[in-house]
Amino acid sequence: MDFSEIWRWDLAVDAFPLLLEAFLKVTLLVTVLGAALSIVLGLVWAIGLRQLPGWIGWPLRLLLGAIRMTPLPVQLLFVLYGVVVFYPRVDALVIGVVVFGVHYSTYMAESYRAGIESIRPGQWEASKALSLPQSRTWRAVILPQAIRNTLPSLGNWTIAMFKDTPYLIFIAVEEMVTEAQVFGGRHFSYVEAFTIAGLIFLAASYPTAVLMRKLEKKLEY
Image: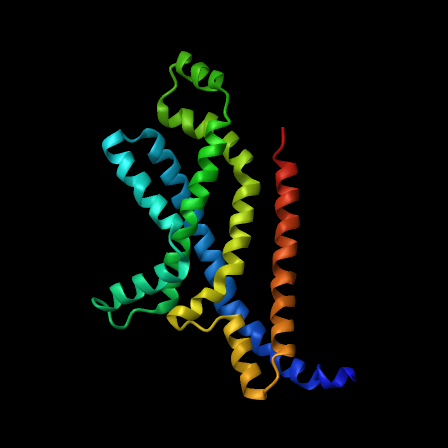
């Protein structure tokens, strides 16, 4: 079989700028904003579950568990149709960022929890013996160590979020993979567009993984 029968360079050249634009405007944007939201919320959930009284912490734990165990496409559709009732002109991209951020914050909360629990009891006891306020104990003693221990896991969840962005098609947000599908259908050839989309994913995720490993080593004691 001739290579030209399965790969057309002219289609690859035409597809690349379209897919790159979709990547920058949607895929990357949702990943960056969603990751920032999930990293902050995950820390809030982790500290809250440890500090809040049981009558508040138990319902919160159930809620986070339900979000974590519910498929992301279902959450996207549920939030979209729920919000549209009150705000018909809502931007679906905003919904995507919020849903991705909240969904992955539940996973990151578990990572933070593991990082916090990895702190030796002596650290808590020493802080109490020095009469440090609880806020300063968290800020100066616990969180720096916990985040250092949690960093690789947070990076992995961010990469997982990045790879889940094609789910945005469920709320009619045309990210890179959707754009590749549309391009392939328009030209009756999907190989070029999906190959380029895969290479863009790889080109973006691999350096991120390398950066996370370097940052992890830099933060080691």
